[in-house]
Length: 148
Image (cartoon, rainbow, N blue to C red):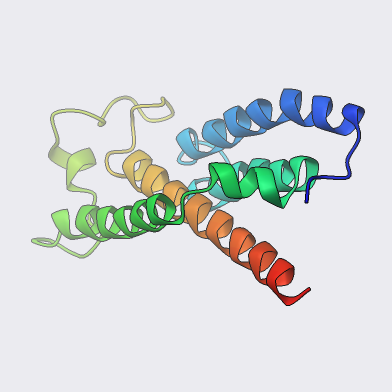
């Protein structure tokens, strides 16, 4: 069963989905400088996936959604987050050793490459939130279809 959305909705979604992804990536990358970060950016990028499902329907989503890939990426995001958090464990959990004494990502405060582990943390949290929300949305959509 396809989507009941018309040509205007599908065309607008095709134009808007990449822009939502770019904006979400911007939020993730600049999370240590502005309000935002991994969770907010990951949720924004997941909004592009939700728009895809709404505009193109469940059948199209099932063709493009690989649950094993999303599950693996979600686990990788969680493990990378814990791994980065433990890198500073010699001082304290979540200690930003890279910013204090690292060879890179310790630049002038207020610049993109200035926060040590924080940009890396934002990136892996964004990955985890994005893949988790897309997986939850797909599970809800598939369960609803199964019940009908």
